[in-house]
Image 1: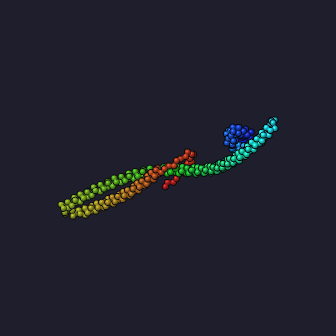
Image 2: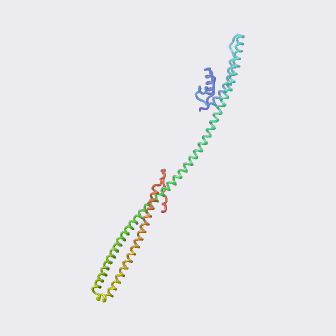
Length: 290
């Protein structure tokens, strides 16, 4: 609202309102002026009411008239002034009440405005604090995301290494299976040959008992030698089976480890990534492998 309305402008506006036959009030005078604060206009309007009585008293000077007419006119005019002063006093009392109420309302509005401003300042401070906390949390999340990405890359590399080890173990397992199969086939062939030899010896023994008795020692020696050879083959077969069992156990352990790493990798990929705020990123130190 405008402040500092000239005194003569307020008085002229009050005279114009009074000339229209209306009682000058703060709102009517402000409407007539088109500007002015209620406090400023109300204070000047009080002065205008105080000067109105003096202005009316000054109008008792009359031109030269017959004494009877002059006395009667003055008596009437003084009576009118007296009545007008009573009306003015009542009006001024009402105006003072209105002005006091307006002043109280303005004071209440100003007090509420001060309270609102203090509340807004507090809210602004809380908002700044909240924003700083969010920015700090965002920085922590970005660092954690960088570390998680490094972990994922390490896990992927470990997975590739384990897959290579698994393929190598499978290749070795197949090689051992083939060697075991070859040893079994060779042992079976030697057993068949031995059985054939034994049957031939028995047949010849039935046909040539006397000759067999003479050659019994040699046959027995050959049989013992064959038995030792069979035992050697049996021990070699058992050793090969043990090596195959250990290889299968290592392959199963590597398979379980690979599945565990794949599950960890799946969980990391399914974890929700926080929204990232564009900012300058500093390289984070890589985390150690779990």
